[in-house]
Image (cartoon, rainbow, N blue to C red; front, side, top):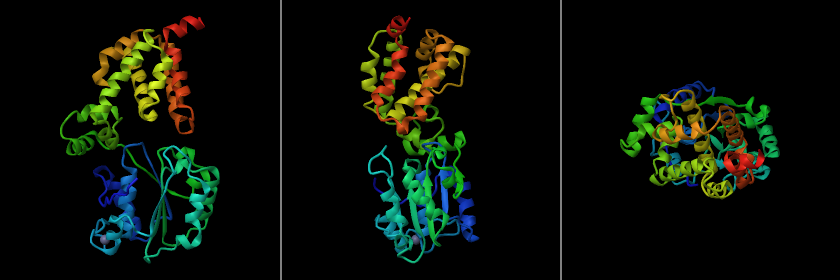
Length: 334
Ligand SMILES: [Zn+2]
């Protein structure tokens, strides 16, 4: 993953930004910041902007980096010696103890340029138990001018001992008008409202969904979901197909379809749908599912979403969700 020089926080991050800058001006910047909030709010963007601000020699009165000094030059080139990102070697894998140890050794915590030394751990919930223990020692005996940013959408996965030693910054969903304005600036006016609904209000997630290939995939997958319920296709084959894309995205769609089925079953005129463009199809699917089963499917989907990061066999995960939907399966199991 290449680093991008992003000095300015996103529009909905202004209040969080000002809060951090105030603590900095009064010399109360914490040693460690736990940056949480849903996926797609720009936590990483915020951390990058904050790193740029702290590594800049002459930031402006809002704390935004100047873009011209030696610190900013090094950042833009991606070669600043005092900024490190600790990530898994591959997405979905753990951050091991060696990765943490390499940067908690005292010599590496001392800034080379004479200012802050910044370590960004992303996603922090990917740290193995021993990696987290190793980090804990550093958090217990903080080194001056070292600033550690832990980024995670699932702070509950981190040991309580780690959480309690960090300042918590919980990022919130932006107001709809703010998000729509930003998104239309990014992708043009097209479908901002639908995309934000699909992304549960998270602007960066909405921008990622603007890919026409993804929107087409979503239509195809809903068709497969309906076909399983009608007994027209093999759930095992569909599960194999669903593992080919980003499982958290697919599982999120699946969960949102079930939720909308329930909402439409409860109120056919419901105007608060996650997938307003797929109303008719979801209404018809909902009609063929009993309430009790629908609740069970929603539970199963949410459980799968929570367990996703530790899920090794995605084919089996999708099978366990999709097999029970099938009419043929219901027939077999009585
Ligand atoms: Zn600068």
